[in-house]
Structure formats: structure tokens, C-alpha cells
Length: 291
Length: 335
Image (tube, rainbow over all chains, first blue to last red; front, side):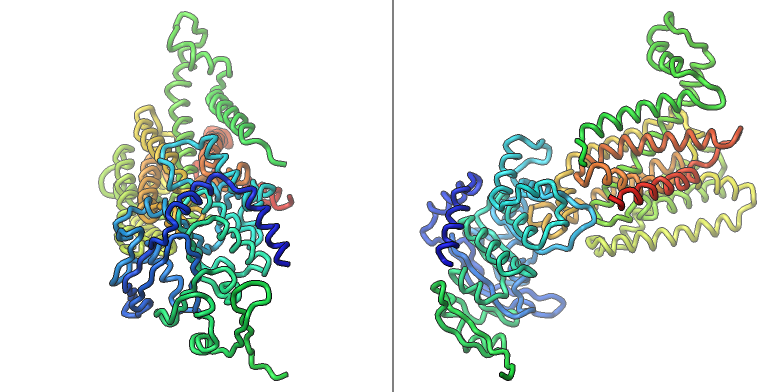
């Protein structure tokens, strides 16, 4: 099983695109563990309701960090603070040692790619068009689409293996294919950071794994919110566990995903042991059903 | 089967040129296509080679061309603004009259006719002022919620009904002669167009189109979704507001000249998307050629349907347009 996965991984790796290569090089150069995000006690209060409460953490260059917690814990709100959509009521977000609010919107888009879930629209763009949107932060308004641009887009679509769907309307794709298109858009956007808001929602197991692998292969700093704790344990270098707008704990999956934490935060009994296929934890929930 | 976009470009440009030539030749006095061609391209430069009677030249230059160009411009302007509004609001029902522009213009025109005089120039001015104030009113009333698409659309509808009520009130209390003049104006007509009316609508329409082309990528990003557009560095709310204002200005200028002509701005963009897909530059191009051609044909039919009488353009547009649209809807859904 693992060996099959590995060969697949290598296979995809050999298709590595140059758009990704530059990101990887930067990544290797800066892999001294410098902090790319530094969040200093941010709070976000809307209509006197505290959504985020005094949150501090940092993310190092090249880390793959998972944000976990129950619905309404504030995961999406926190992610939105990190890409500038939400302005924290107090506290500061530093991105590469500079306040995030001091970056222009365009600069943020050049450094941070975001995958969000959006409702489908009537005016359907093709797969190619959606991926090409990733070029926006890097091109002046008046420029025409060049051959080089076309190649960048094509290669990204190859990378996510959707070449045969190039001209299909985006809305006709399956959930998994849509997420792969969004990953291709992020590849085209050529950023150092990738933020994903629940990228595995509504996907079957295989497509969940696909999307997370693609994110991992981009070799950039990744921050994602995710509900499947076993998946989080397998893919993430570090987990941040949130509840009611606060960080409960953070650290390696082994440290965060303990029986006690799961009982406290998710209010569910679970057994945690070693995973048979990888180094992380395996969580088996007790659903409270009678035998 | 998907045909290449360039095929549609060539076909629709040919259609447009043919429409202009044909419309210039037909009417109460038939002018042959050859004579039309000569009066337009030969006679102005080389009067010696010109074999067309002066009367025909006058019919072509002074009566038909300004009318046809106004129809062309109206078709282009309303279709293009419709396409842009539908994209930036992601609402298939958006049209250039979304923000009560037509009711605002109607109220302006009605007030002018009612209070001041009935000379055409002041009606145009009144309609222009009315149209632009309706947009300002809508934006003021929407206030901070103008950043949310749904609220923006709803306040547009509210303003539209409010101004419509005032217009009806004025018509109710005016004498029959004024009322019929008002109704005729509201149904739209190209009949009063002359060369002097053309520069302002031409300028606004083409400056608007140039801006749409410049911002086409940002508009496409908004078309795909607000949050995604934001993460790509697009200033979503500012861009949407700017585009709304540009569309409103184009519409107000056109409506002031020709009256309220429905259907075109709503349906032509959909027809164009049926044909070439949703890419903005393709849709815009098709809106220019098809929207323009459509309006010219509407004008031809309005002139030739009844003998010695011109039907109001608005009636023809809606009647033919909706039939045409049903046909397309039927054939497309069968595929």
C-alpha cells in the first residue's frame, strides 16, 4: 500500500513544473526555520461577539500546519485574518517580519494563495479560465495573454492531471476535480504560502488524499483547516487545536491528538494508538453505540 | 460541436455590416444597396464619380444613417452594460435598468414635459438628469450595504418602483395629450435622432467599453466569486462600484436619447454566452456585433411592419426578442 503511494508520488514528482521549481528553490534557501507568520495576540470581535480571543502562534517557512477544532471554533475567521480579509480588532499579524496590513492587496496576493469554498455561479468559466485567474497578481492590468502565460497555465493543469478537461465548464466538474483546479490556480499564483479553508470537505477519501498530496508537493508553507483528524495526523507537521475562539494547544500531531484533548474539545471518547501505515497517530472514535 | 471563436467573429462582423447596409436601403423610399454604398463611400470624396441622385443621398445621410447609428449604438451600449452588470453581480437577471435608471429617466422626462415644454432637447436633458440622480439616490439609500451584491440589487429594485410610482402619478394628473407624448417617449424611438445627438452616446459607450476591456481579468475574477477575487488581490467592492457607475452613465445617456428599451440589455448577453461561452472578452465582442445588429433589425421592423406608421421600438424589441430567446432556449436545452 505505502509503496504504491510512493511510486505515485514519485511519478507526479517527475512531472514537476518549473513554476513550482522556483518556489522550491526559495524554500530550500530559506529553510533555516525562519518564521513566515507571526501572530501576536489577535482578537476579532464582531458586534460585541468575540470570535477570536487573544490568539498567538507562529508558522515557520516550509511547515505544513493543520488547524483543527469543532464547527464554530473560529478556524475560518483565523485564516481570514492571515490573508487580510478580516482585520483583527486587536493584536498584530506579521508576515515575513512586516505587519500584514502594511502590504498592499496585490502584494499579499503575490505571496499568499488561498483556496476557499465558493458557491457556484451562473456564468461558468472553463477550467483553463479559472486556472488563468492565478496570473492576476503577477500581471499588469493592460497586458495581453502571452504564450508564456499559456504555458504556465497548461503546465499547472498537467500537474493536477486535468488536461482532458481543459475547456470544460468549471461547474460540471466533480468536487475533487474542482479542488484540483483550485490547486492549479494556486500553482500559477506562485506564492510562498498556501492557505486552504477546509479543502477536503465533501470529498471522498481518495480525493481528500489527492488534494492534500498536491498541496504537499507544492513545497511551500501550508496552513489548512481540516475536520478529518486522521488525515490531519498523517499530513501535518504540526497541528493547532482551537475551541471557542481560543487555541487549546499546538504541537506535533502526537502531542495534540490525545484522548484527553479530544474528550475536552470535541466531547467524544476515542482511542489513540500508532497508525499501521505511517508514523502518526490513529484515532478510533467510540460512537457510543451498543454492540 | 464547438466552433472556433474566430468563425463567430467573422460571421457576426459580416452580419453587422450587412445589417447596416440593408437597413439604410429599405424604408418608405427604396434605395438600392449599390446606391447606398456609393452615397456612403464614393460621393463624399469624389462628387464627379457619384451616380446617385441628391435626394437619395440626403435620405441616406440625413435621415437613415443617424437613425441607424443611434440604433446600433443603443444595441451596443445596452448589451455591453448588461453583460458587465450580470458578471459583477453574478446575477443572470441583472440588466442596465437594474438601478431604476429607466424609471429615473422616465420621471425626469415626464417632469420636463409636464412642467416646462415639450421640445426634444429638454426632454433628453431631463431624462439624463433623472437617470443619473436615480443611481445616486440608489447608492445613497443603499449606503454601507452597497458592498453586498444582494442588498445592492434590492435597493435598485426599490428605487425603481419608487420612481415608477411618481411617474405614474404625474401621468395620471396630466392631460391626455401630454400623457400620450410621455407614453410614446417611454416606449422608445430612434426617429428623432440626428447627427448632433450621436457624439455624447458614442463617446460614453466606447470609453466604457475600453474600461471594461482594461479591467476584464478583474471582472472575470469577480464573476468566479468575491472571496476568491479578494485573495487574488482584486479590490472587489471598489471595482464593482466603479463598474456600476460606468454602466449607469452609459445607460442614462442612451435612455435619455431613445427612451426605455427593454430586453436588449438582459437577453443579448445571455444569447452571446450561449454562443461563445463565458469568457468576458468574447462576450463583450459578441455583444457589440450582435447587440448592434439586433437593434438595427428591430428598427427596420418597426418601420416596415405597418404602412406609413412607425411602431415604438420598445414594443418590437420585447416582442421579437422574447420569441427569439425562447427559440434559443428550446434548441439549446435539447442538446
